[in-house]
Amino acid sequence: MDLLNTLVDKGLRRELPTREEALAVLATSDDDLLDVVAAAGRVRRQWFGRRVKLNYLVNLKSGLCPEDCSYCSQRLGSKAEILKYTWLKPDEASQAAAAGVAGGAKRVCLVASGRGPTDRDVDRVAQTIAAVKEQNEGVEVCACLGLLSDGQAERLRGAGADAYNHNLNTSEATYAGITKTHTYADRVDTVQKAHAAGLSACSGLIAGMGESDADLVDVVYALRELDPDSVPVNFLIPFEGTPLAKEWNLTPQRCLRILAMVRFVCPDVEVRIAGGREVHLRSMQPLALHLANSIFLGDYLTSEGQAGQADLDMIADAGFEVEGADQVTLPRHRADAAAGGCGSHEAAGCGSGTHEGGGCGSHEAAGCGSGTHEGGGCGSHEAAGCGSGAHEGGGCGSHEGGGCGPCGTPEPVTEQAATQAAQPVAEVAATATATASASVEPGEARTDLVAVRRRGAGTDLAPNA
Image 1: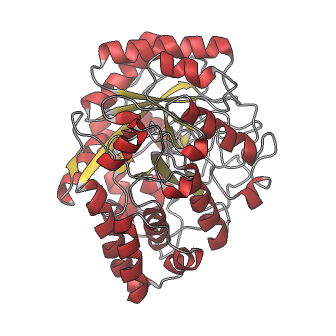
Image 2: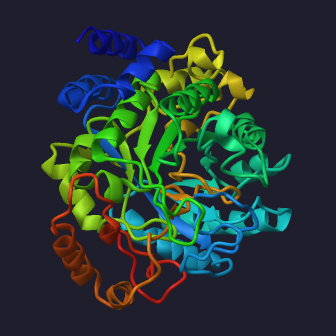
C-alpha cells in the first residue's frame, strides 16, 4: 500500500505526515489492519527497539474533584462508586510506589484529583517525591496534579520530580463540550509551564468520547506541536454515573488504528497505552505493543487493570522485553537536542529536532530552554505515566490510564466486585481470566471486564502490581 510505505519513510525520517495521510490511517479497513500495524511497527522498532517501559500509578488523593470533566469518575457530581480519600502520607505513597517498582516499573506517577495544587499541596508532594526516591533507588517520578500556577513547576523540579503530566484529551474545537470549568488553553499553558521548568512533559488524549476522525487528528497534531516526551493514549471507560456512561464507541480494530496514527505523527516519542486498554483492546493487546513502547503496570487510579504478572507475561509472550532502569527511554537525538537547549521536533519549532535518548525536550514550542535532566534526560520519562488524562485538574487524567484511571466501571459496584476486592491477588487474576473468556457478540461492550478499584493505595488490600 503506497500510503503505508510513505508513512514508514516519513516516520524513519521523523517527518510530519500530512493531515490527509493521518486521516487515511483511521479510515483503513479491517482487511488492511495487520498491514497498518506492521508498518507502524517498523517505525516503533526504529526508535525504541522491542523495549516496553512500565509505569505505575499512585493515587495520592482520590475523588471529590471540583472540575466537571465528563469522562471522569472523580468529577464534580459523579455517582461512580469509587474510592474517596484525602492525601496519602509520604511513607504510605512510597510503600505503594514500591509495589510497582518491584514489578518492574521504572517510573512512578503521583496523581491527585483537583483543579490544581495549592502551594501547600506542592510542599506536600515534594515530601512525597523525596520519600519515594529515597526508598526506591533510581526511580523516575512524574507528578500529575492538575493546572499549575506560576512557579509551581520549578518547585516540583527542585523537589526531584522528573516529569509532569497534563493531557489535552481532545481537540480544541470539541473541548468545551467535554469540560466547562476550565479551557483547552489552560491545559496547553500547564504543559508549557512544565517544559519551561525543565520537566519532561507528558501529554496525551482520550479516544472514544464521540469525537470524529478529524478531532483525533487535530489533537495529535496539537500534541506534536507541543512536543511532549511522552504521549499517553487513553480509551474512554464509560463509567456509570458520568455523562459519558453510554459512549461505547470503540472496537479493538479502531484502537489499533488510533495507536498507529499516533505513532506515525509522533514517531520518536514515547507512546503509552493508558487507560482502557484491557476493556477495549482485550485479546488484541499484544498487537498494540508493536505500536506503543510504554504501558501502565497493574491497576489505574479508580479502576482495576490487568494483573501485573499478566502484563509481564503478555510482554514476554509477544517477543518484547521490559525496559530496564539503566536504559534510556527516548532516542539519543532527543537527549542531545535537549542538552543544547532546544527541544525536539521541528514541529515544535525547534530546528534540530533530534534528540534521542533521554530527552527532555525542552522544546521550543513550550518555550523551554533547558530542561535537561541528567541521565536520560528528563525526557525519557514518560511522563509519568500518567496517562490519561483527563482529570483535569487532577491531573492525570481521568481516564484511567493516566491518571485517573479508568476509573471505573460501567456499572455500579456489584457484589462480584466487592467479593473480588477481598480475594487474594492471584485469586482475583484467575477470576478475571475466567470472566474474560465468556462469549460476547462482535461489537458488544465488555462491561464484565471493568471493575472499580478496591485495593492498593488508600486501602488495606495489596495492590495488583
